[in-house]
Length: 124
Figure 1 (tube, rainbow, N blue to C red):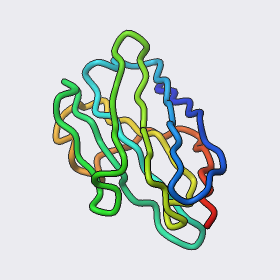
Figure 2: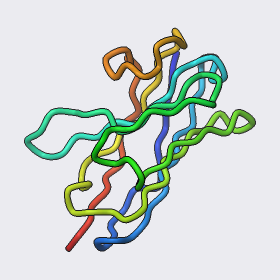
Figure 3: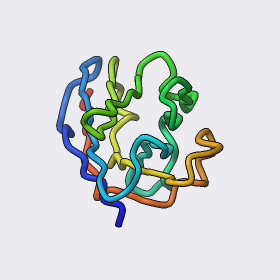
Figure 4: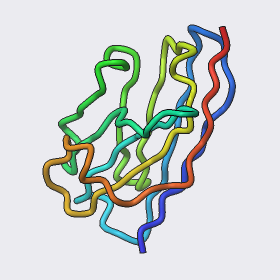
């Protein structure tokens, strides 16, 4: 059973930074696609960043390119989302996601396992 547990959310001012973490268990972390999604109030959930099973390739939404960085630590079964230069429009619930099939990791629609989410609030 796939379990994903996020941590690291909080409140920051515009221009600040936060790092989210997600620990995965119950599946093969090293061969799975991993990603971060977010959902703001009144909006649909959207993809933020993905990282391939091999860890070398990453994919970002245009709105966060150059500001967010996704990474993974195979020794800790953990992925991270480093968020810099945060803006009020980044305010949302952030979800960790996994696709244990491990292919086409850039495809937002393939992710089918989800964490409980953490809140990120950016004030102006």
